[in-house]
Length: 445
Image: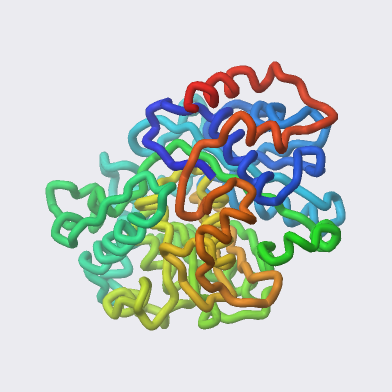
């Protein structure tokens, strides 16, 4: 993956996507000639943006699917790739998620047609009133307030979640923000956005990209040297909203029930329970949503997620799992199409033992949750394919097997032109689609 950045057009999506794809191909020790299908994940961009990225790697004629499913876009791409592999349509799929966003809060770019969120926004405004605050903050601020009213959570509980996320981000070289904050700083009333939410409890808009290679067992069996670093997608479920989303409950409106159902189904497929999961990357677009998800995903008793937070059971040294060791969306950043792939990368590094500066040791099961309003949710259960548990591996050992010459979990570097040449198609490529990106790579060197 690339480092996540403030959206200032310092890097554009063809270069970002190319870097992420090259790193993923190097990690898998394959070239683009081995890829049988491509999936591009983005929300803001023209059609065939996926081809714009992948043609830089080669023009091999493979199918390229361009996907958009709100903030769940990246994980939707993973679901599509897994479906293609499980269905026998491909043995090797490259998934690239990327985004080049505008500064400020998320907003629609199409003002000449009905919004997909139109009915949801109308029922929210009819129920809770119309406000000038950013729309998404209203959705999740209302949900947090409802959890407070029903179960006794406090604003300090949401702030503690943000404090933990910002603390975790200090050890993630890809995070957009890597500064720790005190509860007082997070709760500063001058930074209130909406309801219990303050600025430091909201995920930022971001530019960035991440990628993954999804392969069949047959593909892996032909490359036994990769088995020690292969991660199994043991269970996965993509769901959309049920009718309860219009129940006038703010919690239901942000997909609580579909998250709960997707987690139950994914865990059932993987043969695990919530208590088996040692590390989780979940969709903390706002701190309030993380608290709701601790409940929805089964990590806390119903209505008692805030008690889990107060005990310190979402971070290192607690009695529960570690949530968002990457810093989550709040600190790492939220380039919509890349978010699900970045979650996948973090959990892969955790299970391999590569994230040795923020590792949850002794873990063999991880959960990923990625949510989009409007709506869609993807929950994925990951296991080590070799049946072992994670243990910290020294950087020198990782450098020898990563293909990059360093440990990518703890160090974020640009790729070199030579990195790209190692994995581009050897049989069908043209230099023209790569020209602009190649010039930028040389300039960065």
